[in-house]
Image (cartoon, rainbow, N blue to C red; front, side):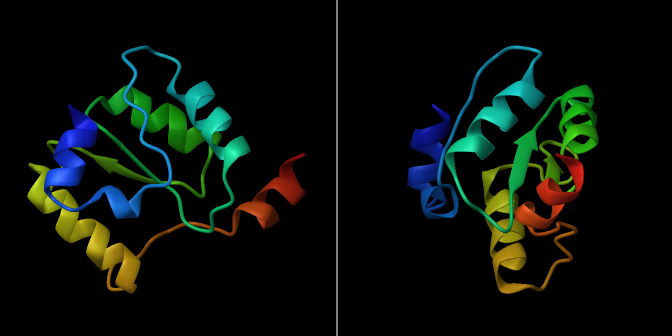
Amino acid sequence: KVEAALRGLQLHAFFDIVVAEPHPFKDQMVREILSRIKANRVVYVDDWCEMLETVKGSFPYVKVIHYSVEVKDFYELKNMLFKLASGEHHVGCQERKGYEDRHH
């Protein structure tokens, strides 16, 4: 359902990996995803505040977006992602390698 919506709105190009799993271990899921990709900017989108806080606490360089609060629908998400990609919106992330070097 999520991937179909992203394709329909032409958002799929923004994401290297799309994972929609209903469980409370999103930080572990993000860790697994980050181990498989190289990215300077990482965006995590969720509608569950506790998961956003958990992911942000574990990965301070990840830009978290609170779906239904910061963005109301996929159209607003698309606009925010375009702004992030173009540098119009403060991303608030660090280079992943630099962060990992300091924390491992």
